[in-house]
Image 1 (cartoon, rainbow, N blue to C red):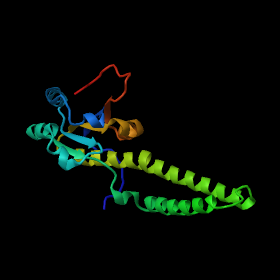
Image 2 (image 1 turned 90 degrees about the vertical axis):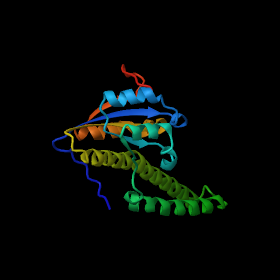
Image 3 (image 1 turned 60 degrees about the horizontal axis):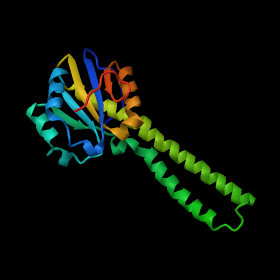
Length: 204
């Protein structure tokens, strides 16, 4: 079982190119343009953060081109076990929340002291569940994605390693800033193609 530990990789210069794409367009790449980009930037590997079936992706034109170019690709995500007790706590609190909501719905006097106390308890539970879900999605998950990126980069003997991170557009809105910040803290150079105000734009 892996342990979440984020440390800079010594004696390596790592560059990450981050690009987003709409999920519906994921199988429609400009393959020649992408191949040119991969060659120009000396990309060693690609990481993918998309809600896709990797077995289906393996059949796509993009996957076939990457195999021809001898560029490996990896789907990156947080392992289920890494959510551990936090996820279990969320499940238990959701079950309690459902029970309390049912109890509150059948109360005749919701304005009574008991009714108001129950409503406050329900609101606190909802807030606590939301905070834990946000922590998993926006903090813990990005950290695991960064760990997997660095673990892959560590496997290359080259002193300079470059990779392209392809991320689903709606996912990018949530976590790209955190992933980028984490990478930069670990001395990884990051080039983003994810913001509209970027002078340099890339489409493939």
